Length: 485
Image (cartoon, rainbow, N blue to C red; front, side, top):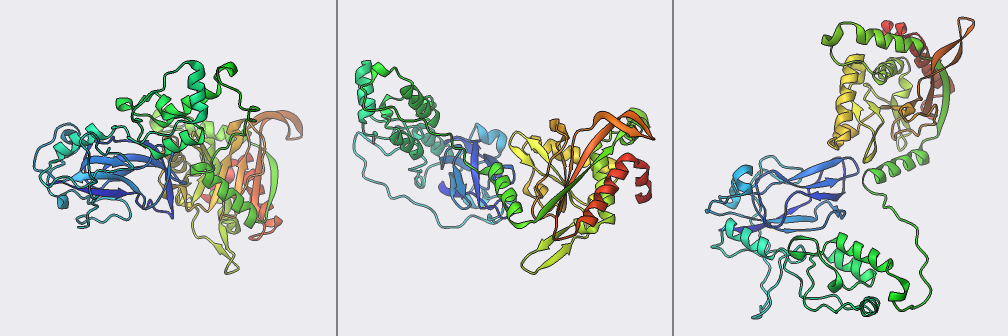
């Protein structure tokens, strides 16, 4: 006996309330195993794959790629339960048989328990069916509970057979598309339109596009959003003499890019930082020649068996933890409601990392307890995860101080914006050979500009200047770090 269970977008933690569908990992009719990832979504924190807590046949998907859904919105429905063996996905991903009570996950996301699914079932009352038409299976018209005698295999077959059945309600023919079709000598197609998504229909209506003129590139001729966008573009680029003129050409509108996902989160955080934090910036040039020499000596000692090389960023991070031990005012946050400065006991060091998805700030936990080698290894691990889009929300939150190495972009200086709710950020420019007075003589030295932006509520300029000067002294004379070991 099979029944349909609805899987909703779970709570992804860290106070996230919505996520954008990036990529579906399953199709309607596919057999999925318990805890198998079914969709990849992007939140304001990270890209994550969402596992389904049920095993069975996917009977409907809700939303197409690019759609933003709130937590608790339906993602897909799964027909679970059968005594008949299933081949295909189930052979490699796990069994889809057994009762519904056996097909819930014991290791699922927030909002889904480890026990059996709720007894309540979603049932759609069947509408009268004529001899020539039948209701399609789609995201807008999901499968109702199957016949009690149906198996997962039969549900999979039915779902695949009907997932791309065209909707019998064709979009009305617009004057624009009819005129264009007549002018180009295109015959008016008849019959149903092979489109499932209501968003695709809405997009076509907004642009006055008749879907009966669109050729679908999806499975079984299904019209996808890309097909509609291509048809709209082609229609707009059609020769002027092919379409009757109905007035002046519309003025091209400016491109609008939604502020959502990582970019939206960054925008909100930076705006909040500017609104709430009275920041100030001080900077200094430092001679990093000795730091570069010390790094080369460290990496040369011990040969290849010594492990990964220590990066300049790791050395700067270690210098920051030493400086924060001397100036703990900058490792704090402000509780505006209580009118209190909260000095934090440990240093969780964030570092800015640029990825294809935008700027993220992974956090090295308990950086004050690590040496340069340990910090460097953790930075390398988190950077790789950031580039692969596999950072968890927990790895992107909880920082107490941020190090921003914008020198990798080939720039010398900047005025960093504090990563709210932290109290300070150290910016590091590129290290470049420049003329420098060294021991009373002009010489070519490796020079770097250091910038410190700080919350003026937690300290005055004397403390900020003392912190920045200590960092610069350690860059110029790395031997000073020996006192902190």
